Amino acid sequence: MNSIPNNNTERKDTRLVARTSVEIQEFIQRAAEHSGASISQFLIESAMEKASRVIEQSETLHLSMKGADALFDALENPPEANNKLLKAAKHYKDTVNVHHHH
Image 1 (cartoon, rainbow, N blue to C red):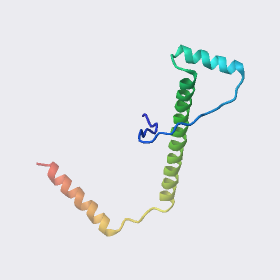
Image 2 (cartoon, helix red, strand yellow):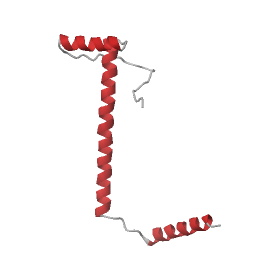
Image 3 (cartoon, rainbow, N blue to C red):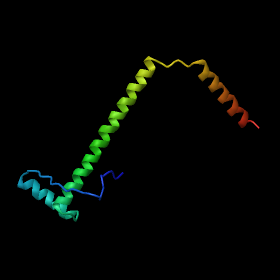
Image 4 (spheres, helix red, strand yellow):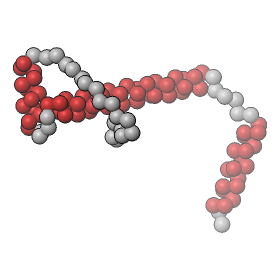
């Protein structure tokens, strides 16, 4: 589930800057110390966890909405089963049944 982009060929590091109150900074600093990470590592790891969850939930929701749209569309306009398809289905059913009854 580790979907962090990782190409070591040409990694360009960038800075993330967040302005906050001293209280929040000290609070985060304390948590970072508890987890044995630098404040910078702690912020990045926390942000990545949150980002992954948000993206996952958002994209899962988007996919299920697309699925629901497709379902409603199919219910409103069912594709007509043509004779060729029905013959193929019957042939498949007959062949499968033959092989299973020895």
